[in-house]
Length: 454
Ligand code: UGA
Image (cartoon, rainbow, N blue to C red):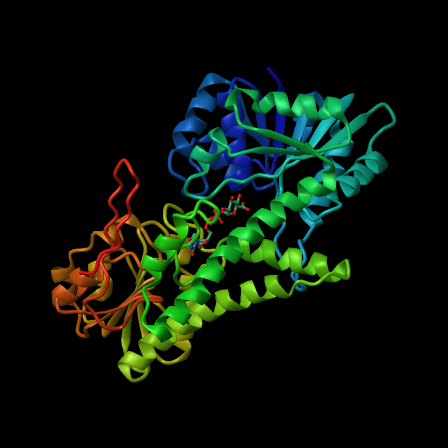
């Protein structure tokens, strides 16, 4: 079993890998400079909302395979040191490397003997060379390093599933032995392992996120075209997604992507293209379309209500996606800010993110319950596709609201049921008039698919 240190062990990626490697039987120390997070983790409390993580942490801590520290002393004994600190956007859209370089210096100062440093954070192409330079510059002569790029592909809200069932493991190194050592850590997971050069590994991470973001902006652009032509994007995405070359995932039209990864990584890849003299026009269009989806959502409210000034709008969902309380670059916050700037009163709710939102949107009224949010509202907009919002009691909703308008920013409500409750349904890329298409998929032995009219 390996001795592993995870730097940035209090963050979402670091904490998840620390707990997962401990569960696989390794001895893991999560290191984080944030003492508040370390205190919480030692008390078996996850600093972020992630389903199942606290059970895994508890198991690791109870078994003695996992501990958390605020200093780097444990690096001296480690075979592997994973760097999992953040790379937020700087003012030019590039990945901010100051936390990474600070971590590399600390690792260099504390390492003893041969250490494999694994770049797990999303770092610009060329970072393996950069980290190796910093390590060699700051280390004592007796120490040697291999640096391996090993990007992460965890989705927030499903991180536990993704950490134990990866589609692939990517390793970027010129050293076959280092690749074999890091690859062995993932052996029990049984997933394909791609070993390539460091720069290609780093690019795989950016290109993967940029491609998924492109898929979302593509379907969102088609959704806006559907609105003009009277087609239903849900049927269109369904029909497209059955083509195995396209696939059904990441074709959910709506108010756009947010979070700590897609916006930041698409910006960073565009900045890398600029720096390398390349063309990033598609990537910039992806970002522009994404922002426009939030503007369009507010326009839908304003058009139907004859302006939002003086109106009360209920916003259901604050987190950038379900099953997390992460609000970074959340489309909901962008929409709330636009509504407030236009003179609306906003009552917003979320199953878990209300405590984190307090202070971020001080002029919005935050409530715990969706029915409290809609009471007396002129319109409701659904911004995050939490499972509980799919099952709203629509009669209760209709009785509580003052107005009739429901904007379904994630296309997850059933338009017919919303209309049957006496409400006015407006989705993203869905026909304004109903009855519309009901999608019936019949999968028989011959794989017959029927899209039948209602
Ligand atoms: C994303 C990637 O999916 C992970 O593989 C990657 O590891 C991670 O970024 C990262 O770089 O760390 P995440 O940001 O947690 O994961 O969330 P996603 O599930 O990818 O969703 C991102 C955003 O796209 C959300 O706002 C979601 O609502 C939106 N989305 C997703 C859509 O609007 N439509 C879709 O069809 C799918």
